[in-house]
Amino acid sequence: MSTDLRTQTRLALVWFLYMAGFGLYFPYWSLYLTENAGLGAGEAGIVIAALSLMGMASQPFWGQIADRTGSRTRVLAVIIFGAGSGFLALHFGTGFGGMLAANAFFAGFHTAVMPMTVAVSLATLRDSSHHAFGIVRSAGTIGFIAMAWVFPRVLDAVQERQGWEPVPGGPTEPGLEWMFVVSAVMSVSAALMALTLPRAGAVSLQAARGDWRALARHTPYVRLALFGVLSFFAMHGPMLFFPKLVLSQGGDLATVSNMWLPMVAFEVPMLMASGLLADRLGVRGMMALGLGAAALRWLLCGFAPSIPMLYATCLLHGITVGGLMMGSPLYVEAVVPEKLRATGQGLMATCVHFGAMLSSVATGWAVGAFAIEAPYRAGGALCVLLLIGMPWLLPEPTRPEEDEPAVA
Image (cartoon, rainbow, N blue to C red; front, side, top):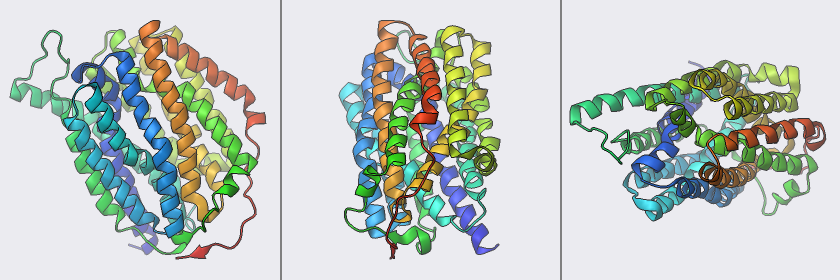
């Protein structure tokens, strides 16, 4: 196996292992909080928002450490291991205060994993095919699909063997908290694999103190940050409360699991074709495609919810991820100096999490005050407005002038 292919395989395994753990946790997070942890919709919204609040502080912190030291692969391994510890904290958390504290600790690491993995991947694959990043990133989606499908079936078997039965007023899925333990194991495995990644070359470029200020003065980056806040305010809360929408239409945990399959299965070809999409549409065109898919999905969920319709809208999720969530980091990569790629991805993720935090709180409030369909209608309408304003809001990506970076 060539060195280039070996490196791509290791990167793919980091994505696969960590996203497999994420596939256990994310689809059932709001369901766990409102049923197993016994929180109300408003409390669940606050706990979920804590992840975004902590992410706003942790992502620039880890990004600066990585860029200033040039030790991006080591920093990646540290934060993935920390996220694994956070999963264990969530397993033992109880009550509103306990879950809030556990989620805050978890968020201090977990929220930095994705932007740091993107930064390490793009730096490591700098001299590879421009399709390589999409192929490596698709391994994460495959891991997510695998665990999102396998876990409910394993849990059913364990429930039957242990005699765990739903009781009136209790959770419909007893034992769901064990998803955090399995996620922790997957995270530690990903951290160990991250330690095998290259530590020299573009991934080791160092930034000087204060270099990050160039990003605050660069118009394309600033406008992208604003776009990130607004787009995730529209999309994040409805995504987290999607299991509640499914249950409101008569579905169950198996239905939620089955819906994740079309949601993420379509991501794989979209991610693998991201290089082609970037060539044909440009990164702004990719982002517009993803935002348009999100707008259509949430409007259909808000105005015509039913189990068959929810299944149909799941196909739009892959277009959103392949377009918007691949286009955004590629836009960042095109507008930030190479020595600031971890800070640039981290600060962008901070803006995204600020929008996500507001969205979590607003969605929890809207579900309690109005109806489960309300945030989907509002989120879809905001996506339409952003889509209309994209030609003005996002300029062509250009990189600011920079001095020659140092290499560690």
